[in-house]
Length: 114
Length: 114
Image 1: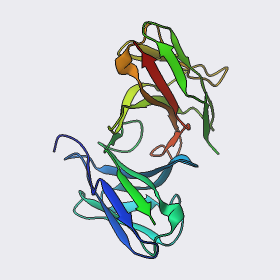
Image 2 (image 1 turned 30 degrees about the horizontal axis):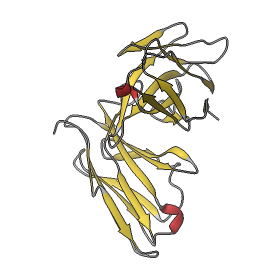
Image 3 (image 1 turned 90 degrees about the horizontal axis):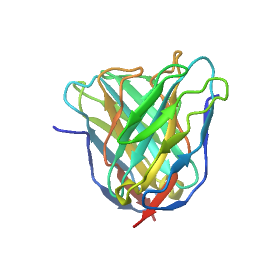
């Protein structure tokens, strides 16, 4: 596609439910990143993938958060047993490779946990 | 750890006014520095970058110079337009083993009035 796409654009869920957020990176980009944008914390790095591997998961807030990437393309961020503090905009980005290559961001998924 | 501090907004200017948004950073080594912009309803876009000391990044009339001695990367534009209204984020990428990760400032909301 022309850019990074994310779905859904908005997600409202009840506390305790699981959610899956999807990211389609730019074709040919080997690196994929997840960030979270919230009022209190600003923009925080969550995890990145090089191919299908996630060398650094240290930004994931808790073990309720997990992510996978298949076929070196689509990635899914899963939040189990959602809590109200998980409410935020989840941003995905991709780049040709890691390092100083430009990261191209998707429009984000706004998650609201009631 | 790495951190980015940028001036808090909101900033409100009249069209054709001069813009400065201050950004200072703390990092180990020699990071790459970025300004990202988020227009209303859109994803983050790279505005400009600089990868080494004394480099000047420029784009769309915006400029920022990498100042190692003051650990700063201030964003400037000589004459702002209404279309520049957006949120601006200063960010850095470590030069070391975690160079995949962007560390962002909190963002500065700019509103330009006609």
